[in-house]
Length: 251
Image (spheres, rainbow, N blue to C red):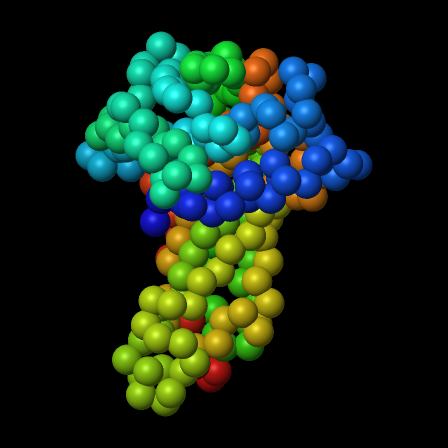
């Protein structure tokens, strides 16, 4: 259940920002107005799950006009050649089956864009969250997840799915199997899902990712600087970040 950027969503967001100009809610780069500075959306997602370690990185660039070429590096590691996204943007993706950057490591993003210049950002990889979840809840209960504050984390993202059991499907529970998503982004060290979010028996399965980077909210100031602007974030998980909570019928 690793969280990843959806490139077309990143591009669509960028196009809105590029067309909106500067306002109290949109922070424009010092290099120039939003109409001319490329927008960069970049993310690293790492999962240290025993034998299934992984690193996934994506860099999306949107500009008008698009750079004629783009080269992206993270800590000197070059991402594979960029590919176009329906003429709306450029995408570079890196996948590896190891954790490349351990918690506490500074991750330096460098994006060189022909016709524009160099955009950079630096963020420290956070440690993982150790999540405490109830062993079981019943329909009508509130689900509360808790964890301790994590070094270098700016906020936390909860991503889970409620998978109905066979009995719930027979009773006509809303949604299809594995389609009932639960999610939250918070600066707190807990997340609460009210009874209305958990509408059938089954299992709530998910994880809490620690995130270093700007919190996703209106008016958020990007951390990419230089000849571009935008957002660079790091996400980290390990086995202690995951949870499985059975949901039983009301006694």
